[in-house]
Image (cartoon, rainbow over all chains, first blue to last red; front, side, top):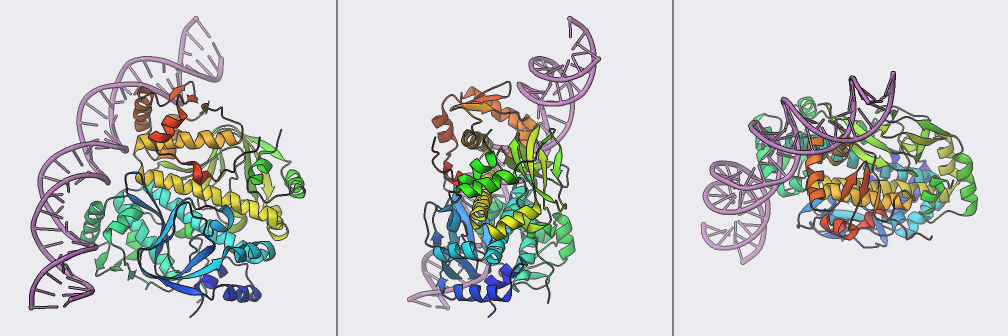
Length: 239
Length: 239
DNA sequence: GCGGCACTTAAACATATGTTGTATTCGATG
DNA sequence: CATCGAATACAACATATGTTTAAGTGCCGC
């Protein structure tokens, strides 16, 4: 199996073969985690940085009224908490949404990389900035898009992100989230998620059955929510 | 005048005196910019990275329906677009809100720093991560807080951020934004900003006159919006 | 095959926020 | 001091979304 971490960081464009080797050594120890487990909680000072190799995880925070808000979705290849290598204390929590395989990288290793391997540091920083760009786009969506376009936008984003790691076909992918999960990502109630999904199905923008999302006309869905992929900073992939 | 850039990056905790000297050399050329000017537009590949030394700037994007959404506020000491040193193309725009003094640092200088100065790189990365944490908190606010708490939260955040650079007293600060500006930051219409401000004044949570915000009871305002400052990652300041 | 649980669907109602329109006040400029 | 535009204030109405409740559906273990 190709190491998703290396695939992801290679997109930054600065790595050479020797760096790959270092990353390979770093990401040997992987571990299985069940669905809906906390990986890190707000206030923790975790000893390891984690990378998702399979499954879905999320960053979240619970509001005082008990509602969970999801600020980011981690798909295979994404870092969970590169923050802690630099910032010490977690200001939010991280949990799995589905069963996951994760690699644990000791914080000390990250420190060593940042001190002695400028190219890898560059790639890690790049990954951080792409995460930030996605976060920003979610914020623009919450502030400026109505619920249907916001959901469509999420579906478009996931299509590209999953395609980049080989987990989506050209017009669809497995979507193993409950409507409540989606609501937490999109800042709406699960009831409203349901309403909006119905509308989108009626408009034939999506076909969603048995946890599989199929998009009959990708261009039309993208036009519907004014999707532009530039914020993902995906380099044109060489097949 | 103390260099706000150095003050800011010192908070990362990794710099030594020699690094200060490098940063001082790097941030000599400053320039004045008028209020409401674009510094960088989406799609640009700017040649310089900018730091705000005085005034306020913001990251924004205009929605298809013409509404501007502000995703981040830059106060003195903050980087405008460290992204471009790594990501090449801007995925959003940056503009001043008030007259500003900004330093321009050539991209090549940043590249040199990241390749040859691990401590400074570490500090820059730290700054990026703090920006991301603030962005995340804005997202949590949009998704989970109602308008009055969201506005209170912004006021609390600004109090601490401005105090950190000596621009706020213990219970207030100049707030040179229009209600429309605030609306764009908070994801609401300026009319609603006006409504909410009235409520907050009536509840004696704030006193806002002639563009100066005074907070009669900081602890009460913080309690009102459930404010916790951990996401700002401010190290306890040594006076 | 059956019970139980989690998820989905749906309707009726409540409310926060947007929209439109118009005074009123403020602040710069001549 | 007079004038003009911008910013603020406020009211009436429209609507997207939240809340509550309940019924239907599918899935998994026994």
